[in-house]
Amino acid sequence: MATRTINIGLSDREREGSIGILNAALSNAYLLLIKTKKYHWDVVGPQFMTLHKLWEEHYQLLSLSVDEYAERIRMLGGYPVGTAAGFLKYATLNEDPGDILNATEMVTRLVNDHEEIICGLRSAIDKCSDDFHDVGNADFLTGQMEQHESMAWMLRSFIEGESVQSNGQVPSVSAVGIPAGV
Image 1: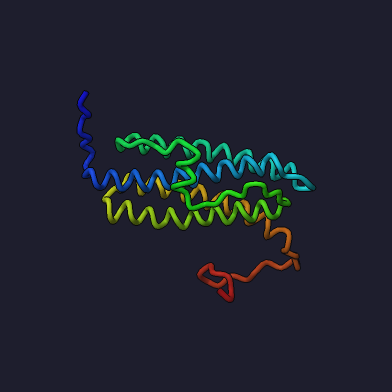
Image 2: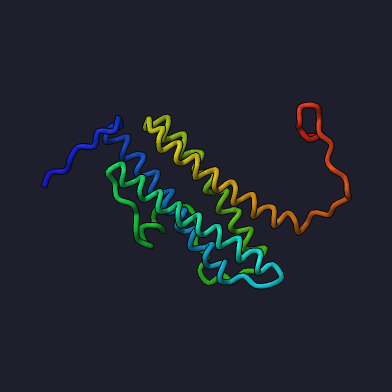
């Protein structure tokens, strides 16, 4: 049976380039999903309930995200990575097998992973847009990046909260809304 040519305004090279980018991003998102779920299971201590609930929300978002990546890849005529070996091959994130961490270490690793994904997505957005003329997937990746920025911010806020000591003063703000000294 012959395969129908896909005519969506992108050349085969452009579609294949976007598929590669999406599969790499899918692989990172899937590894982060696994790590978030593992930490959700392993967390103990006074922050247990807060982190347990937060990570449940995060892995649910990540689960939806990996499905969206796979569907975008299929829309372009490709096939998503769908095996653990494939995810490990294409991901830039590392697994931490056997590591049993305290809550702050877990949060720190997740922040680092989200930030790595954010940086990778910024580059992928430019490549999709500039090299592959694929503004649809650049826009999709922008939405994914914003989701990771939100999750990273929530996690960073948790860590920063441990070391912040309030002096009861609000930082001064300049006339243009930039905190003084910035």
